[in-house]
Amino acid sequence: MAKQNPNGNFNIIATTLAGLEEVLAAELQALDMEYIKAGNRAVTCSGNLRQLYEANLWCRTAIRILKPIRTFKARNEKDLYEQVQKTNWQEVMDLEQTFAIDAVVSHSTFEHSLFVAQLTKDAIVDQFRKVTGERPSVDRVRPDVRINLHMHENQVTLSLDSSGDSLHRRGYRLQTNVAPLNEVLAAGIIALSGWDKKSAFIDPMCGSGTFLIEAALMAQNIAPGLYRRDPYGFEQWKDYDESLFEMVWNTAEAKEKRDPQAAIIGYDIDPDYVAAAWSNIENAGLEHVIQVEEADFFKTEAPAIPGVVVMNPPYNERIQSEDINLLYKNIGDTLKNKYQGYDAFVFTGNLDAAKSIGLRTSRRVPLYNGSIDCRLLKYELYRGSRKGGGEQ
Image: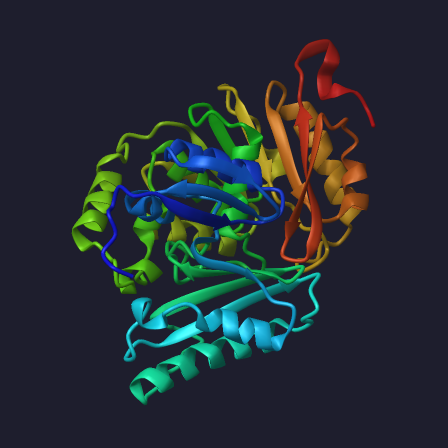
């Protein structure tokens, strides 16, 4: 790949979690990407090299930012092998660089993604060996160049992975509890809540603080990629423009708001979680923005200022709770009696227990936490006569 005109546009695919496609599309829109189209766990768009760097730094709900290099149909092994070899891989990477293939296969005559990845690797290695007499090495853990193969109904897209390590690994989290929330999922849930980044944000079961930190990053306009410790995938590309990336990084740093923009408050009944949350918050440099207290949510009072409550209570999947239905009933009672005027969002994978909340939902958004089928439930907690929004 020759040096690219940084202003020349090319196709970009940003991957995300199921249910967050529209949130990610809005983020790409904010970066002035063109031809944005939300798909299944991915958003396609068009942008230039600067925007590719910006997407890695700024997108809160992207997992990977991919640059497609070739699309083709592969009916069988021979097709796949020959099509992969049609790319001149010496333009993509050097012999000394390590590489890895991530393959995703669905509704195709090929059943196993590992087999497809192996075949793709063979085609690349054989091409190098034929031309140079030597072959590049594979490193599955920390490759210099990560190649993404997506096959759906035998239609293949080969892409370069510009992110390297998954973007959900922000780098600020030192301490986690036994069931930490994926940062991309946390950011997506906050975006879906419609929080205005100015009113109060409360997480009354804050665990290791992921919701609080993601909310603070949004309110303070901090690019999540600024916490990144590992290099991005694009830093190993042949068309890497170091001065352009430095400009993108410096611009992102300059956009941070130093003064606290909103009251961001977390509670947890477990002192170990409070300590873990504090350690992550300090690591993110946000101790001047976030308050965390050791407190029983059921005994708290809402601050006088309006705002949102966002919480991820136990589901009885990974964290066990003594009586899950009673826990959820108490959540409903506390919201109804003490958080009037707030919008509350309960993210849960236990839909039976959620019925015990006893409030009418005004919205139910299907999402997944790993493989757990979840819902983000919205409750509008009216003041006065419509108190609690009625029973279910």
